[in-house]
Amino acid sequence: MGAMKKGVSLTIDAVCKSYGDVQVLKRIALDIEGGKALTLLGPSGCGKSTLLRIIAGFVRADAGDVRLDGQSILPVPPNRRETAMVFQSYTLFPHMSVIDNVTFGLKMRQVGRSQALQRAAEALEMVKLSHLADRYPSQLSGGQMQRVALARALVTEPRILLLDEPFGALDKNLREEMQVELRKLQTSLGVTSVCVTHDQQEAMVISDYIAVMNDGQVAQFGTPLDIYDTPQSEFVARFMGGSNIVRADVIKTQESRCALQVGDGRAFQAYAGASAMVSERKAVALAIKPRALQIMDMPPEGAHVNGCMTVSGVVSNQVLLGDSIAYEISLPDGNSLLAEVARDRGTGIHPVGKSVWLYAPGEACVVLEDGINA
Image 1 (cartoon, rainbow, N blue to C red):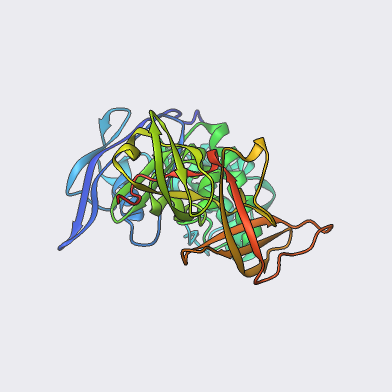
Image 2 (cartoon, helix red, strand yellow):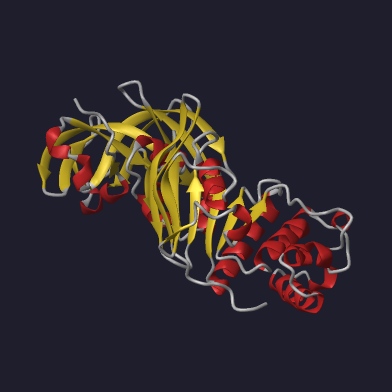
């Protein structure tokens, strides 16, 4: 293929969209540097697919702007925006061979047959399907069909690649394999891409940036590690991996840190960003991932636990997860925490009804913006 149009920046500026009285998008604003991969992540109905279709030109925004390299593309018809879309359903032509499916877009652009075949062959080489060029879609697996759809998009050398739940129809193992392959391809080509998914793990694998969406708004924007390690709200904390949400009493605050206490446990230090406004609150909500919690028979002691959140409880349920065990621990206040502990074959399993202590490092306890205010 010719030189891919690398490094096209994407700006989404206060984009709004309503259907009747329902406001689907509420002043969405995102700015992505060229050559990076953005994932719009969120539950069904949050507005992510509508935003993708506005970028593609299939849906008209009510207000706001979408710019590529600083130039508005809203007045440009979809077929002239130099975007390419990959759908979950593949949308391959069943009566055409793989090579003809890939060259179809070039044919519509009046690219000569010989040049189109050369570019299609290069695109199929990228997705490792050169040996299947003469087959028909009915002779391909789901993963192979998705690779053909990706090659058909890339062969047009789009300014921006758009992907709508691209791996939703694949089984778990193949989906994970394709996620890695897409990430490698996007990185090597340097093409700006926007993907829509509701799969948190997929977003972590394929993205430079994630915009977590909820109710037509961006709940949080950042790198995958930012989103996963430091969620800013209860919605993001729960959506990105089932974090425990627990009440903590504020004992003392100092700049960006605060002393907290959970239940009858000891005081510990935790980080609170400026947006959390801990100094104005008597209690906060903490997000703690199940894998950050450790279970002990006795209250933890020693210097290494002085900065840890600790709380007592009773094992109310256990679920074997293979190499780990998930325990539900009921707390004295009636709430419960989920702890996922690596399975050690040399020790026993904590039985239901056993009294235990939980602890987690202070840095693993994230103060949430929208936590308790009283």
